[in-house]
Image (cartoon, rainbow, N blue to C red; front, side, top):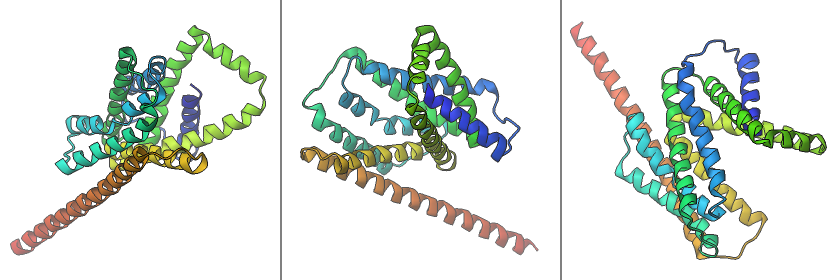
Length: 280
């Protein structure tokens, strides 16, 4: 809940005092879907840990790139080539291999946990595509960030208040003053991270945003090896090759598609100018 409070507060301050935005482009009726996706994604993902272990959760959560692409094709009419789907599968497989090193030691396959984490992946795949739809309608990054996290904060506050977790959290931090500094740093970092992600979704689309998130996970895993050395496994080597290779190839494909689109646009412009000149 503190994460959503941090993002709501940061986006409100930036929107009001920096960007000075006063108008809202999207209707409020557009935000219940985003709120539901945020609650479902985080809530079910955490609940699944009561039934499955963390590596199993990582395996399933790492596969959201492919359903994100499928939903983007349906909702936002984006077209992906067969090569892009192959690269997406390669990245997902690489993330799975990273987790498989631990997964093979303590796998857990409780049906309820698998259902919960699978539903969280579906919600996580819908979320950036729904955000992209709002951006296409003219909504700004700050508007979407503020209202989606604000409504999610309200929902989580009510649920934790009813469960008693909110009062317990407040009582705990009142006696831990050193936590205030950590919470302040966390607030700043959380807001910067979410702002960057939303800007990526706004400018490049939902799939690119998920690709960036996958790259972040890969870098986290690599840094964990540097800071906290682990026993070597070929799963790690193969996984790193697939993830980094898939991300690099995906970037090159997107650059090529962008260059091709710009070339076609310039060619159309030149043809239009030539036709107008011939008429004169």
